[in-house]
Image (cartoon, rainbow, N blue to C red; front, side, top):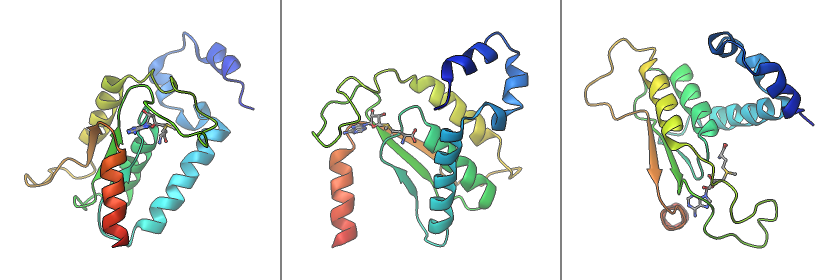
Length: 158
Ligand SMILES: C[S@@+](CC[C@H](N)C(=O)[O-])C[C@H]1O[C@@H](n2cnc3c(N)ncnc32)[C@H](O)[C@@H]1O
């Protein structure tokens, strides 16, 4: 188990620019494994045209990973947009099979931090000038994702 308390003790009061320069040291094994899964998923979906849609953004860590993967693998492909859905508030409802979570989980989301950091990475494009017609590479959609997702699945399965 990653000792987060110990990590916070080590990192506390350190220079932020120094910490930003060592993401592979500050990331835990668990978060790195999660990232590896997203890299594999991205690689598997690369030959399929369309957008990447994440059904629950939370703090934006997954969305950040897909944004980096899209810019790194396909810097000139502005058609593959990354769209993240989230209510950005506590979970309104949950099923008894969602045993790992409680009703008030995920209420501590700082959406402006997520937006600022995503914006920073969008600006850091590998392409010197983005075509004016290009839609933003990443978009956050706030609201209940259940209805649009059910609709999407119906369309896919029909
Ligand atoms: C387990 S977290 C997602 C983690 C995220 N995918 C990542 O990789 O960091 C669950 C998220 O689902 C969101 N959520 C739960 N029910 C939702 C709903 N009906 N519509 C939109 N978002 C919802 C919560 O707000 C929370 O942010």
